[in-house]
Length: 136
Ligand code: HEC
Image (tube, rainbow, N blue to C red; front, side, top):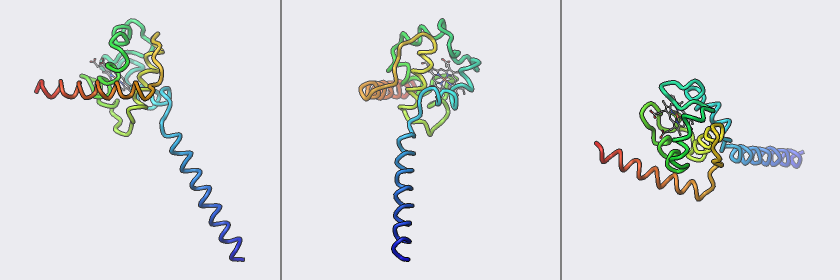
C-alpha cells in the first residue's frame, strides 16, 4: 500500500523534526550541569588556585566585582582560568549560568542571565579584550 508507506515516511520525518526541535531547546544547559561537566574539574578542589566551590570567603570579593564583570573575565580567561573554562563549545549563556551557580553556592544572589545581563557581559568582554590587547 503506497499510501501507508508515505504516511509512515511523513510520520518518521515529523518525529525527527520534533526530536530536533527538542534537542535544540535542551541545548542551553543549566548552570549546575555545566558546572559538573566543565568547571568542577578545577573549582571543586581549587586546582591552580581556582576559587573553590562554596568557599564564601574566597568568592566574596569576586562576587563584589559584579556579575557582568566577573563573568566576562572568566569567559575571556584570567591567569590559570582558561577561556570558556577550556570548553570552546560552551555558549556565553551556559558559561554565565555556571558562574551564577557557583556564585550562589558561595552566598551570592546571582540569577541565570537575562538578555540585559548577557548584553552587559558582552560589553565587559569587549572592554577586557581591548585592555588585554593594549597591554601587549
Ligand atoms: C582548568 C581549570 C579550570 C576550569 C576547568 C575552570 N576554571 Fe574557573 N578558574 C580557574 C582558576 C585557576 C581560576 C583563578 C584564576 C586567577 O585568579 O588566578 C579561575 C577563576 C574563575 C573565575 C574568577 C575570575 C576572576 O576574574 O577572578 C570565574 C568566574 C570562573 N573561574 C568560572 C569558571 C566557570 C564558569 C567554569 C566552567 C564553565 C570554570 N571556571 C572552569 C581554573 C579553572
